[in-house]
Length: 262
Ligand SMILES: C[S@@+](CC[C@H](N)C(=O)[O-])C[C@H]1O[C@@H](n2cnc3c(N)ncnc32)[C@H](O)[C@@H]1O
Image (tube, rainbow, N blue to C red; front, side):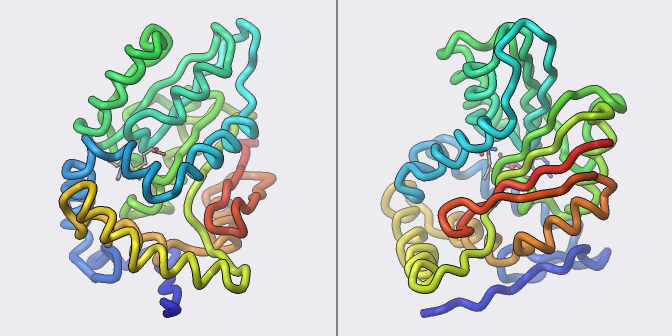
């Protein structure tokens, strides 16, 4: 089975938007996405491990290696947008020095709640703050952050170009945007295996381990709607970032994109 990629247009028209393989009214899409994450929040971390066989941890480690937060006491303000349960902030704060601070921003309070508990358990809560907010209208002043990360969040946003412009707005000049997202695998055989895993295994795993297949079907479909590596790099450049580049992970199943506010 080979499921054709159904790329989402760089910018949705203003009235409709893709929700997985369905078209929905743009103003209802975010509510549907929020329902998905409210339903999976309690099992999100477990399911991530099950669905990716732990690979997501390696990809997130790669993101932090590329971010390279200062080990010294030099102040470093990180915004983790669409932070979910806080994996990226947890890793950045444990790798970074005492000057490294993170704000975890997410539209879904249920996901952030899990993140807050994990930060407390890790003894990192004093260097982190939580904010409920939409990546399309970040609740922060201009030029506030040294770096912005978004991991597996941008494809859930309705207006990606608006979210990219917002990320650039709140970055300091010289600051960096790093985005980890599922992407386009074009390694023969691996792509077929990946499709089988995505459409046949993941929804069943969701039904078995989390009691619901539907949210996981959306997650898989939304991956196929997301622009491929080059198109997404073009969107980042169009939002005004400079020196845009990307790295493929595991044959392009995921990719990390980087851009600078110059
Ligand atoms: C797949 S999870 C990723 C969580 C985390 N970054 C990680 O890598 O594990 C996607 C997250 O994006 C959040 N999200 C969806 N739409 C958003 C929006 N418009 N603004 C901010 N966060 C959003 C969801 O609530 C969810 O927590």
